[in-house]
Image (tube, rainbow, N blue to C red; front, side, top):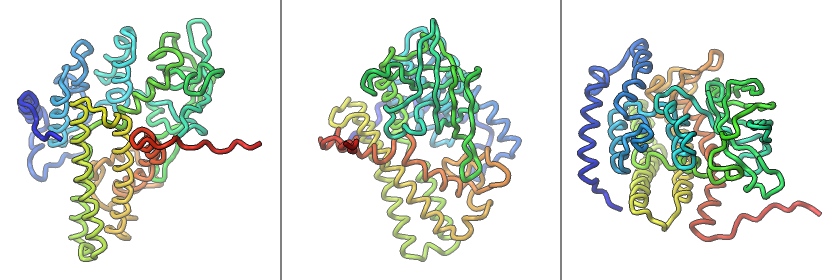
Length: 414
């Protein structure tokens, strides 16, 4: 594991720092800096434009498609400096991090020219149409169909847990285009416009009152014949690329939100005296140790990427990390409840929205208000499910790293 960054990355880091100091609001780097609600609203409205003008959105993309063509280590330096400054970097997670890189790898030139500019400029919002009510962990069993009708695909079926489906302009959708072949072989990956007749989106209200997850129903919905990414019936390979991007981002910055969460927990434990409980102290140190493991695993992953190591495949690395941090975070949020005690049930417990790491609760509904801390606890319950359940991650590690036999199929009866 090499902990030395090359000169090109460190020189680029200085450029990023200077830009952040010139473009973030006055006082941003001062201790105790806070914005009023109106100032925060204005910042959220103008910051994406500044990012785009600075060329920081999707900066690792090739220059010919609107990026800066950064090297891997320059991209790492970029992520680290934005994280150090606690400055928002991403315009649209699904566009920037999932479908955009997928199009760069698998898309036609026409698809890249049509969709990549909208992602770069923040004009196009995306959602992911993978899971179905009976096809979650066994994603290849999807039943949503697409049949060719002239120059268009006609789509029928249902998707579930479609984050931001009610805001999206497009969905990158898995459909079954050949029912007569093995289930993995008959799937296609399509780019489907959401604002059309035949698509109904219903929000699924969560325990904290938010409804960012949705059900999406397709009833003779349509997309263009050439909206298939990576070729007809090749969607399983394309989808695995997308899932790899989802599981493998932020190798050297992903641990930071947990480190900030740890700091807040120690601060609260000292404040209310729960730090004197030896069990609380032990659990805090276990959490700290796991955060350090996560940090070093990120550096290992980065080294493997740079060396193009084949000791462990990308999917296995992503599976290992995803399994580790999601289970770690569930335990840490249980620790948070024990440290805050009965105060956990109060709406003003802990930092306000934006102050608790990873919490964004602007969509909180009246009638079921919770604190950002409690909302983070609720969301942590789902983290071992989305992006591939922990059980699936263990299968990947067992089969692809340890060489164990595949999971036996359940008996089908006589």
